[in-house]
Length: 338
Ligand SMILES: Cc1ncc(COP(=O)(O)O)c(C=O)c1O
Image (cartoon, rainbow, N blue to C red; front, side):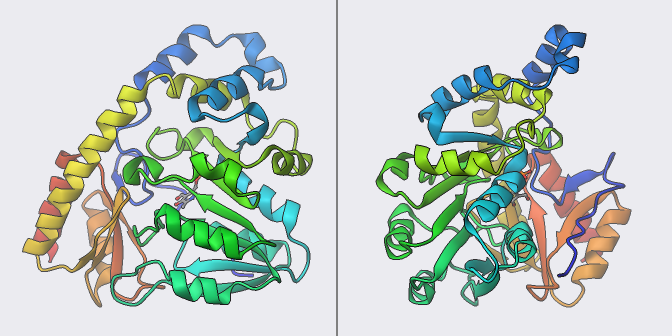
């Protein structure tokens, strides 16, 4: 198994356009609340989730029995795999996509089948996936919109997959939902094999907290919870998530800013004659060519972090979209070294 080693140090005090995080930080209400109300006893007691579950179920419009609080999406993926996948079970993942799908599947001893995004515009390979699904398919893991391509698939396409993959747990990872507006959450009760995940790591600016949610029908959630450690989400994260959903304006304002900045990035890349893939998320793939790694390194020296994806998509760097000012800085630096 290949180890997964994302950069995990030396990112502070740089313009971080490499991890698709919120580039302005979490809502100030979260910090205020923690400073004002966190007590010594809050830290000394093992976590209790009832208030968080109540508030988050209300926010997402589901029953508490249809939601599991997780230690980031990563735990949601791991739980789903551990619950439904035995040795040699067939799991379909797309390529390129979020690395942890393959990671946890391989760890569980699954037989992992990879299906490529379509060459060129990196569109979702719907027909190809439908052909690949068999009664032996036990799980399908889809990021929508997809990291790193930024491309997505609509509700009707996902429903075709759910109807064909009757023996599979189908995860629709909606880590970037707020930027695309496409969700399967309202379809939960129609599809017994549907699982949806959301995270507080991206638009909410809480990646350090490690908090996410997994949704499915109550009977599935009961199975999944059996595979979970009783205290996997820490109390601070659960507290912060409750505050975060009470501040919808923070999310709306950030999404509006990112969508404007994404347009600015498109225009800037066109001026530099760098082809790019249109994205439904807060990141854009730019085809900078053979010098992808040196360009990434040079940007880093100038204090701007971007992600190299050329090892799987030759010539491509991935730019996280932050504010318009931040994107202007990226474009200025790119122009200097281009
Ligand atoms: C598609 C996708 N899912 C999940 C995650 C990770 O989310 P979390 O921080 O909630 O584990 C990422 C992070 O890059 C991602 O791109």
